[in-house]
Image 1 (cartoon, helix red, strand yellow):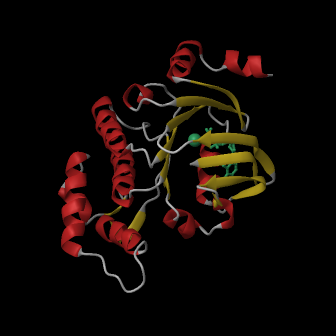
Image 2 (cartoon, helix red, strand yellow):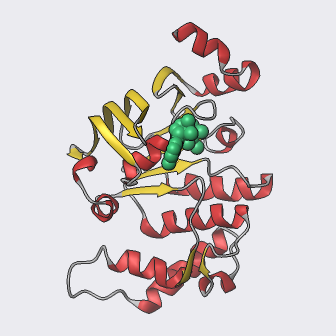
Length: 247
Ligand code: ADP
Ligand code: MG
């Protein structure tokens, strides 16, 4: 399970996360919604260990281990996965080699990945996500459309089978058909041993990935939590009433 306690973080000297506390029990899907600029992506990047962000207080525990004490690659091997809001392009590194290296890095020293099994698994998952075979040999995200990048993030997630996945606005850039395909991919991965934090600005995604809980992030703190109906209420009434009530 994921436990975030009193997390404070700054970027370029400005405090963005201001005492964020959140618990996601094993097997649950929690959604974080909030106005633009409230710190949603900052939370995701702090969890993953992005170097632009400085944690000034708090802890982020995954199964009791503080992720903040770990290097980025250690966090990944500990089971954390982040699907970026703006996925990076990695020219010169093919999608297949990237995934293979990431999986290889999870094996004990001296163990080699089975190439036949790897490609079989990769192609099956690409088919599920509607990603064309030619993407295997193309550089990671290079020249991909917004929607293709988002599907590729989900492909990485399904290949790496993380213990805990954070999806940062994976719905943006997707048309409704792609959104359903991506949501199916996430839903297939839901399991009693795996948790998800789904960050979204719109409730539309939550029609397809139905969360166990919904939290509102505003000005670096969770100001309200509820069940799925909270997302519908936010869709209808916007964020101001929650922010005013919390002030
Ligand atoms: P959200 O994802 O909720 O829209 P962000 O976490 O991206 O919000 O941003 C929160 C605030 O932090 C914004 O005011 C943004 O301008 C600022 N911020 C985020 N990342 C950086 C950065 N790398 N450099 C400077 N300011 C940043
Ligand atoms: Mg964001």
